Amino acid sequence: MGKIKPSFYFFLIIIFLFNGCRYESNSSRTGKYRSIYVLAVRNESLAPQLGLFLNKKIRENIVQRGHFDLISEMSEGALILKVTLDDYRKDPEVYNPNDTFVASGFNLKIKAKCSLINYQGKVLIEDVILTENVSVLRRNSLTKPTDRQAVKSLSESLGKQIAQVVENYRW
Image (tube, rainbow, N blue to C red):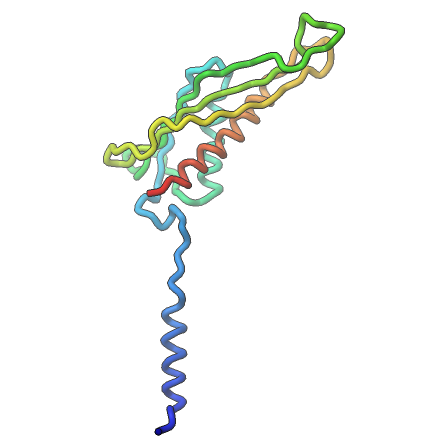
């Protein structure tokens, strides 16, 4: 039997180095859709300014995660995200035993319907319902509880949920 030449081993190593393992992550970045347009959030609830806050948070989460390029023109986007808010509730949650007339805290709840449409008009995700809730307390017995910080917290967590639903959709 003949000896194998060292040049054969060198050639074999070079082939393995250039081929690599060909691993690809299961990311939507490698899919056929790379850009997304986010329609203004439609607020059909009575939550003050929640639509504006949520619109901002959805966009921030999409940009931070980096799976899609955020597009400013609807005609340029491969995907269109549509979000509608409804069923906002503000329920009393905590009562002061000395003052049963006024609640000391409230639980805020909101539902969001999300739809994702591709550039051809085909509905990829249709009316997925996401819910979120947050609690808010009064600072003392003389003040009303402020909803602003709670609404911002609602929009932040709901924005993360919506971005994850879009990214985790199986194409």
